[in-house]
Image (cartoon, rainbow, N blue to C red):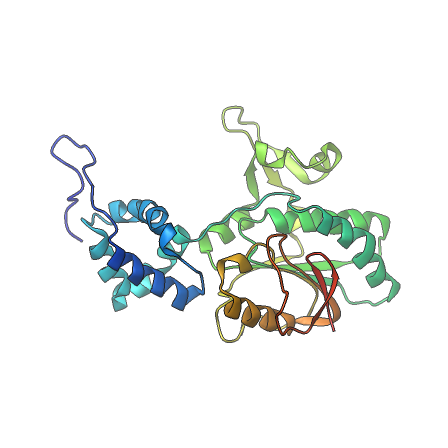
Length: 290
């Protein structure tokens, strides 16, 4: 790699290159082909800003140089995950869209318990990001188990970003991220750090016991590393990044992993209206496999 051409003799950052429309179109086409994510022209400035850090880290002098490297055989192997971590948005929170967790506790789990099966309740968070959704689910299931000691469960979290999967595995969050978590549950499931300058909380180890994390690109033709069936699939605020055709394809692939009668949750900004999928509408954003 060449010497850093972005730093002048005084050590000041002097990178002023722009992401041209031509290069943006090339990146946009690549992002859609590899990951199914839409990148319309209005996001050119956003992409320009996000790629700037990687260009600086690689001591490159232009977006075009970075593009040529990414599209090369070497770059595709070495840089693809860094590129993906830059372009994807991983916005998530504890108890986001709480109606889903209420429905899970009041409706889905009691019906599962009524079946008196010895199999554990199995739930998948597809697009789990940095783990806030996963651990909210885990707290909900653990609270139900306190009422039903014979109840058992296991969880799978998948994402396309290795960075956020690492964060989910660590289960460490800034203390303000858990403001929404009820105090009783904070005491039960979170460990507060003693560092007063950098206050964080950590998920207790017991909450991770039944959790498995895997890398998965939802655009893959088949999900070869997923072999089990699930009682519930959460795929919330992921579909919004895909076009309609890709959304339907992804939903149908995910649905094959649902048990008959299993539940499928989407985000409140998403819709399955007009899609040819094997799911029936139960209530807004909640569906059941036919």
